[in-house]
Length: 305
Image 1: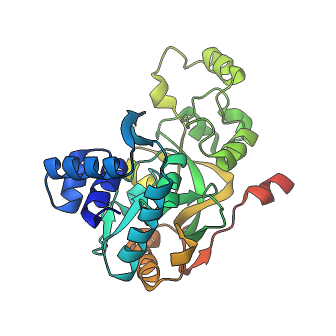
Image 2: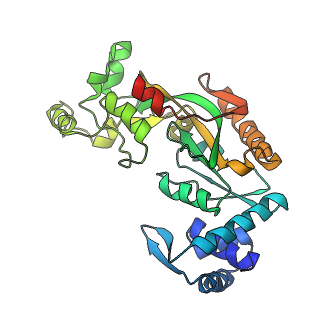
């Protein structure tokens, strides 16, 4: 019902958030992106509006989504450029990824709702997210690329480090912890809640009673979450506490199940793992899975533990 160029313009605008980024990805101009997007919207009697930093379509999108599926199948079968998105936590390990057959996205999502929507609708073709909260849906397949622990990092002069291996979870109460978007990662959130690492009145009260309160900035005492691969972001400015969260994390490539065994998916997973290999070699706790293993949520295991 619409040309490849018209639908690609609209989907890239919705996906990449700006006309400039869409134009760069499609090697065209912003006026062309605008013109073709408007044609596509008119064809399907839809409107486009900005909400919370994202473009949202309003109207009946059923025909548009059917058209997206057709165009997506053409991309996969006729060697068109495929579209790869990633979570914020995955981005550090893949910042310099070279994947010639793929257009790389924003790589900065802090929650799962939006990229999952883009993948389910056929706007993007693959999505790198993180276990243990990667979604499990019948129409999607998760391919887990690696497994690693989740660490807690602090500044080298943090008071908690003086306790060494005698450190307990209760000792962390008087210190601020990196905030997460509420409800965005329910499995991980349940784990850190069990370790007493969520914001709560008791933490606020303990912090105000701590000897350091009012003497040092909160950011100097902050406890942050990090995997061994993302720790490199901090260089030598942060070091791990001698406590490990009781859960494994890892990078998961999500694709529609129709394409899970496609040669282009297999090629991408090989590229991703080869890209991670030099980084993983520097970290003894990172296990790469080649071939990738099918992802299974840890939610059920945690609930029965």
